[in-house]
Image (tube, rainbow, N blue to C red; front, side, top):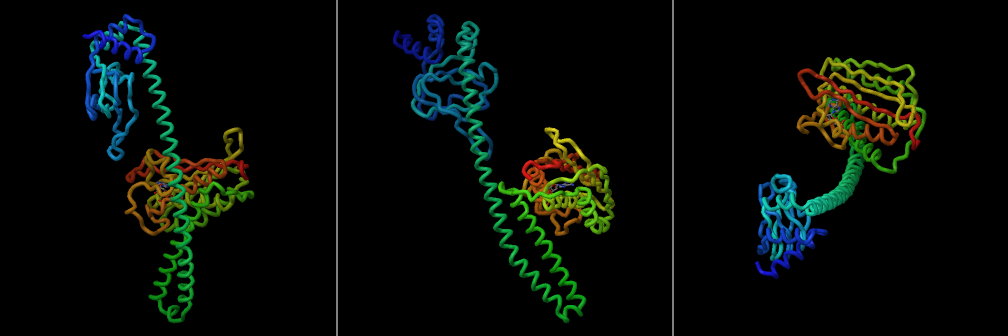
Amino acid sequence: MSETQLFDKISLLRLAFSGLADDELQEMAVLTQICTYPPGSVLCHEGAYEDTFYIVAEGNAAISKKISAEDGERILRIAGKGDLIGEMALIQNVPRSATVRTTTDCAMLEMDKGDFETMLRRSPSMAINIIRITLDRMRENDQTAIKDLQNTNKVLRQLDRNKLEFIQVAAHELRTPLTVLKGYANVLRSFPEIKENTALGEVMDGINKGADRMHEVVNTMLDVTRIDSETLKLRAAPVPIKRVIIDIAHDFSKAAAERRIEITLEQDAETPNVNGDPTLIQKALYHLIVNAIKYTPDGGKVILCSRPITMDHNMPGVEISVKDSGIGLDAEHHELVFEKFYQVGGVAIHSSGKTTFKGGGPGLGLAIVRGVARTHGGKAWVESSGHDEGNFPGSIFYLQLPVDPPNS
Ligand code: ADP
């Protein structure tokens, strides 16, 4: 080996590893060789066991990682003069975690695995250097990942706002012609020709029922946009929770009886009133009860409970739970069902009935429940041992609200 090449190697090694003694640098220089590569050469293959450790002497190489089949490969960083490549896989004895591809003409100082391990054993300064470089890189990767996540969250928030705006416009646009349709249908209903004709009367009833259901869906769409908007102000008033539950249970008694579902109330006498928004709380309870009936087979049971509780920071609160003997819900969906439009299974199961078994819906009910909980400073969640349409393990949906919501 020529004197100049040795000298070049030593100055490069000094750049890569600070604080190494001259004899250690000499020893490393002897164990390394300089190789050159044209642009586009792959030095490390992600997933492969390979035996070479590189220090970039000249040029640049891109370090990239496969993210997923859809997202393809992503460049993590560009290595330049003095950067180490491939040391982590050698130390851990694992396959390469990334692909390294030269982007320019490159010169690399290379050492094979055996020599690299010998050097590590012999030179604590080199080992410490590698640990420091690796930790710095991990910290940098963390920062990049955090920044990426923040950017992705920003984009997702914007997309969510776009979605809400679309729902709002669509709901408003649908509401006007629907109101016109219902008006004309009512006028038609009063015509003697229709009043006296049973068959036509049934057709008119069908039109009215369909229009009412559409109106309900449109209103639910508007509710979700209102509840999700950050500007929502609570119109607080004392809400007699026990009374509200009794009234809603009564409203559903006919629909439940048609499917032989028994609705039972188990309310603690001490259940307090909540200084919240009566309309919002009613809507949340409405959706919980509609769901309990909808996802319970004929002949099942729905139990509505309420009790006083102490929430975080010793705040007095109320817990309402809706327990059913229905199909249940697998753990992987427990959080997702509270997202707008999220439905378990395909949309093909949809039928138009509000309380028909597994009738389906727009997937907005639980988003409204959680929205109402949040605007009141409370929380909503579900417990269920899993989905089983043979044994019907059921689900319990909880809604906790503070007696005095912070923003009331
Ligand atoms: P949907 O309009 O589809 O009922 P929701 O937001 O009210 O929308 O519910 C979202 C999903 O959560 C439903 O599609 C259903 O799969 C599941 N779900 C809701 N309530 C229950 C329940 N009581 N038992 C089992 N699954 C439920």
